[in-house]
Image (cartoon, rainbow, N blue to C red; front, side, top):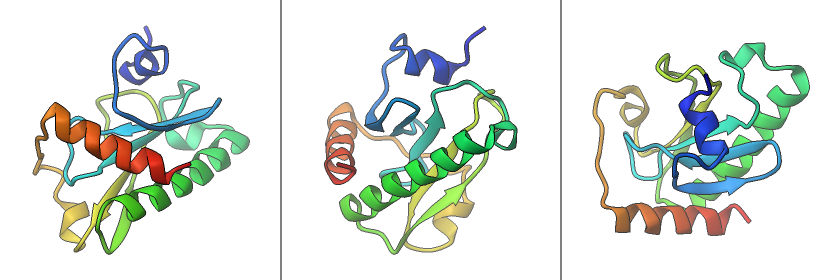
Length: 131
Protein backbone atom coordinates (compact mmCIF):
# COMPACT_ATOMS: atom_id res chain seq x y z
CA UNK A 1 0.00 0.00 0.00
CA UNK A 2 1.30 3.45 -0.90
CA UNK A 3 2.52 5.64 1.96
CA UNK A 4 0.85 8.94 2.79
CA UNK A 5 3.77 10.73 1.14
CA UNK A 6 3.48 8.65 -2.03
CA UNK A 7 -0.19 9.65 -2.16
CA UNK A 8 0.93 13.29 -1.96
CA UNK A 9 3.46 12.69 -4.77
CA UNK A 10 0.70 11.09 -6.86
CA UNK A 11 -1.70 13.99 -6.23
CA UNK A 12 -4.16 11.83 -4.30
CA UNK A 13 -3.76 13.97 -1.17
CA UNK A 14 -3.22 17.75 -1.25
CA UNK A 15 -0.08 19.33 0.19
CA UNK A 16 1.44 22.79 0.57
CA UNK A 17 4.20 22.23 -1.99
CA UNK A 18 7.15 24.62 -1.82
CA UNK A 19 9.52 22.95 -4.32
CA UNK A 20 9.46 20.00 -6.68
CA UNK A 21 11.48 18.42 -9.43
CA UNK A 22 11.30 15.07 -11.20
CA UNK A 23 12.79 13.16 -8.24
CA UNK A 24 12.05 15.14 -5.06
CA UNK A 25 9.29 17.08 -3.35
CA UNK A 26 9.24 19.59 -0.48
CA UNK A 27 6.04 20.54 1.32
CA UNK A 28 5.02 22.18 4.58
CA UNK A 29 4.54 19.89 7.56
CA UNK A 30 0.87 19.95 8.57
CA UNK A 31 1.90 19.63 12.23
CA UNK A 32 4.76 22.15 12.25
CA UNK A 33 7.01 22.93 15.19
CA UNK A 34 7.93 26.29 13.62
CA UNK A 35 6.61 28.54 10.86
CA UNK A 36 8.08 27.20 7.62
CA UNK A 37 8.72 23.65 8.92
CA UNK A 38 9.12 21.70 5.69
CA UNK A 39 9.43 18.03 4.79
CA UNK A 40 11.71 16.97 1.93
CA UNK A 41 11.17 13.57 0.36
CA UNK A 42 12.32 11.47 -2.57
CA UNK A 43 9.42 10.69 -4.88
CA UNK A 44 10.59 7.10 -4.90
CA UNK A 45 9.07 5.37 -1.87
CA UNK A 46 11.78 3.91 0.36
CA UNK A 47 11.08 3.56 4.08
CA UNK A 48 14.48 4.31 5.57
CA UNK A 49 16.70 7.21 4.56
CA UNK A 50 19.89 5.15 4.64
CA UNK A 51 18.33 2.49 2.40
CA UNK A 52 18.19 4.98 -0.48
CA UNK A 53 20.65 4.29 -3.29
CA UNK A 54 23.61 6.67 -3.24
CA UNK A 55 22.42 8.77 -6.18
CA UNK A 56 18.98 9.34 -4.64
CA UNK A 57 20.44 10.00 -1.19
CA UNK A 58 22.89 12.61 -2.51
CA UNK A 59 20.20 14.16 -4.71
CA UNK A 60 17.85 14.42 -1.74
CA UNK A 61 20.51 16.19 0.31
CA UNK A 62 21.22 18.68 -2.50
CA UNK A 63 17.51 19.30 -2.99
CA UNK A 64 17.10 19.82 0.79
CA UNK A 65 19.97 22.34 0.69
CA UNK A 66 18.16 24.32 -2.02
CA UNK A 67 14.93 24.27 0.00
CA UNK A 68 16.72 25.22 3.24
CA UNK A 69 18.25 28.19 1.44
CA UNK A 70 14.76 29.23 0.32
CA UNK A 71 13.34 28.80 3.81
CA UNK A 72 16.08 30.94 5.33
CA UNK A 73 15.37 33.74 2.85
CA UNK A 74 11.57 33.53 3.31
CA UNK A 75 11.27 32.92 7.07
CA UNK A 76 13.22 35.05 9.56
CA UNK A 77 15.51 32.63 11.41
CA UNK A 78 19.10 32.17 12.56
CA UNK A 79 19.52 28.85 10.77
CA UNK A 80 17.50 26.03 9.29
CA UNK A 81 17.86 22.87 11.34
CA UNK A 82 17.84 19.41 9.80
CA UNK A 83 16.37 16.36 11.46
CA UNK A 84 15.55 12.84 10.38
CA UNK A 85 12.70 11.90 12.64
CA UNK A 86 9.44 10.03 12.43
CA UNK A 87 8.30 6.45 12.32
CA UNK A 88 4.65 7.11 11.40
CA UNK A 89 5.13 7.41 7.64
CA UNK A 90 7.22 4.64 6.04
CA UNK A 91 8.77 6.97 3.47
CA UNK A 92 12.23 8.53 3.85
CA UNK A 93 11.99 12.21 4.75
CA UNK A 94 14.01 15.09 6.12
CA UNK A 95 12.58 17.81 8.38
CA UNK A 96 13.83 21.35 7.72
CA UNK A 97 12.97 23.61 10.66
CA UNK A 98 13.60 27.38 10.83
CA UNK A 99 15.40 28.00 14.15
CA UNK A 100 15.97 30.96 16.43
CA UNK A 101 17.39 28.70 19.15
CA UNK A 102 18.30 25.02 19.41
CA UNK A 103 15.10 24.49 21.37
CA UNK A 104 13.12 25.16 18.19
CA UNK A 105 14.48 21.94 16.72
CA UNK A 106 14.46 19.87 19.88
CA UNK A 107 10.82 20.24 20.93
CA UNK A 108 8.92 18.21 18.38
CA UNK A 109 6.15 17.59 20.91
CA UNK A 110 5.15 21.28 20.57
CA UNK A 111 3.03 21.53 17.42
CA UNK A 112 1.74 24.77 15.89
CA UNK A 113 -1.35 25.44 13.83
CA UNK A 114 -1.72 27.88 10.94
CA UNK A 115 -4.82 28.88 8.97
CA UNK A 116 -5.14 27.91 5.31
CA UNK A 117 -4.38 31.52 4.40
CA UNK A 118 -1.21 31.50 6.51
CA UNK A 119 -0.14 28.16 5.02
CA UNK A 120 -0.67 29.59 1.51
CA UNK A 121 1.41 32.68 2.38
CA UNK A 122 4.22 30.58 3.86
CA UNK A 123 4.16 28.22 0.87
CA UNK A 124 4.32 31.08 -1.63
CA UNK A 125 7.14 32.83 0.23
CA UNK A 126 9.34 29.73 0.39
CA UNK A 127 8.46 28.62 -3.16
CA UNK A 128 9.53 32.04 -4.52
CA UNK A 129 12.90 31.70 -2.81
CA UNK A 130 13.48 28.15 -4.07
CA UNK A 131 13.38 29.22 -7.72
